[in-house]
Image 1 (cartoon, helix red, strand yellow):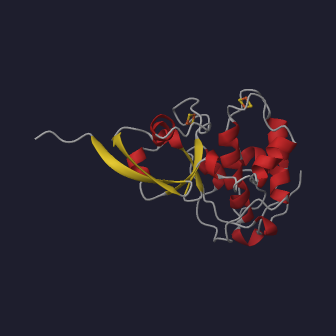
Image 2: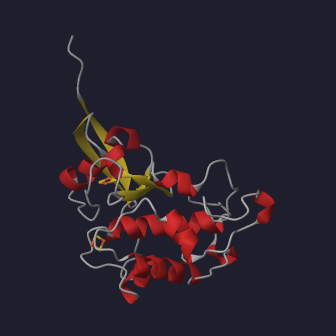
Image 3: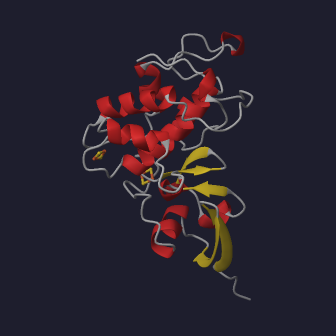
Length: 212
Ligand code: FES
Ligand code: FES
C-alpha cells in the first residue's frame, strides 16, 4: 500500500486558524507564501543562512525555511503581518521607520521579527557570546550596540543598513517593546540560537538596561 505524501494540517497564524492540504515536504516558508499568500515573510537563501524568513514560533524566533509546515501544527505562529495591533505599529516596526532601519526592505520583516525576540530574550536575562559575565547572578547585561549586533547576527542585510538597524533595536527596547511576562533564563543562549533560528522569547523590557 502506497503511503500518503500529503496531509491536511491546521496552522495557527497571527491568531487565525488556517486548514490547508500540504505535501509533507513543504516548508513553513512555502506554506506561508505559496499556500496562504502571506508574502511578508521573505525567501532569501532557503537554506537557513540569511534570516529573511524569520518568524516567531511560540514567541521564539525561527527560520521558516528550515521548518516543515506539518511540524508547525499546534504552534503559535506570528509573522510580520501579525505583529502590529490593528493600525498601531509594533514598537520595533515604528523604530525601523523612525530611524530608516532599511533600504530595499527585503530583509526587514525578518529583521523585525528577530528584533522582537531579541529584545525579549535580553530582558529575560539571556547572555550572548559577547556578554562580559554570563553567570545568572550577573543579571541582565547592558544592551550595548555590540550585544545587539551579536544577537541579530543571524539576519543578513545585503543593503548594509546595519547601523540604523542597531539604533532601531535599541530605540524599541528603550520604548519597552517586550511584551511577554518575565521568564526564567534557561540553558543555551540567543546568540547560539541565531544561527539555527530558534531562541527563547520570554521577558520584560522594563527590566532591561539599554546602552548604545
Ligand atoms: S530564507 Fe534564508 S534563512 Fe530562510
Ligand atoms: S534593507 Fe535591503 S537587504 Fe536589508
